[in-house]
Image (cartoon, rainbow, N blue to C red; front, side, top):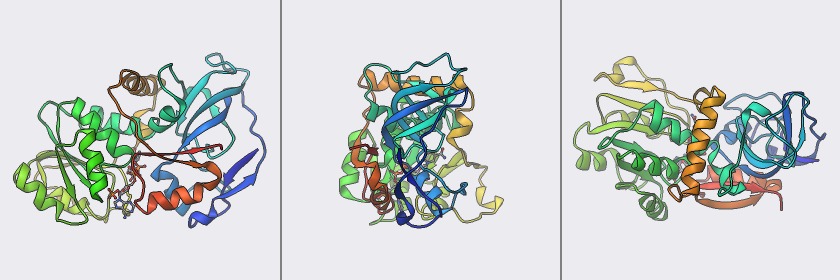
Length: 321
Ligand code: NDP
């Protein structure tokens, strides 16, 4: 079969479309023909080496497709089932072997692009608003990069919880998308000082929580916006890793967490619960999944350039022709 395989870390050019061995399932695995692979910012961290991986490496943690082979110990899935997953690498490929306990069935009413789009970014948005800092009616939150893959889903889920949503975005087009998703106050953080703008509306230290997937360029200023005993959830590094801080920077009594999806889908029950909620919201028309671009998986390098160049909105799906 063909796959994107990297033999060393570096720029997008290390993502080579190449012939590799077909996967065969271990006893507890299924082999899936990939219909849609989700592009995620974490794929760029694997590519650059920011998050180390064992080489050679087939990237891609998220996708949806059809089961084509079943391991001897698997009883939950059959050949022909449509499934989705996140967490196991190897998805930038025609086929991938996955542990059956990391795979979920895709219900009717959700297509495979939508399923691939929400397994990583959607479940991230879900755990952030439900468990990291559970949002309640009237809470004020800030969501950086609100027109991104996580961003658009996070805004919608924060609104479902009854929160007032502040969001930053990089262009007027992105502002329109964040507003359409439900954001109450959108700031163009490349043009103005976002902290000043938010303080004008929310007041001094007026936010209950900041959900920050942008990192380096916004982290320090974001801390100044949070109320006593509020929370900074720093969940990503799109602009680079956050610089080291002193505990004193967390006065007044702030909570700082660096959450990761994989600790919030640690049990099968949690995985099925989160994905089940999201699939239900999509089927019921309560959650809009924006597929901003579809790119052939063989051209993953150009998709990485778009994502790192801030040119994407919502989800980028990698597909097979
Ligand atoms: P996005 O679709 O949000 O793309 C990243 C966005 O970040 C860009 O579109 C851009 O939006 C903004 N950005 C700001 N500064 C930069 C910069 N210097 N370079 C590139 N982008 C920049 O990506 P994802 O939805 O895949 O991920 C968002 C964040 O969430 C990432 O940091 C990712 O690692 C993290 N994440 C963390 C998870 C976890 O469990 N911890 C799970 C999933 C994602 P704009 O132009 O509007 O500024």
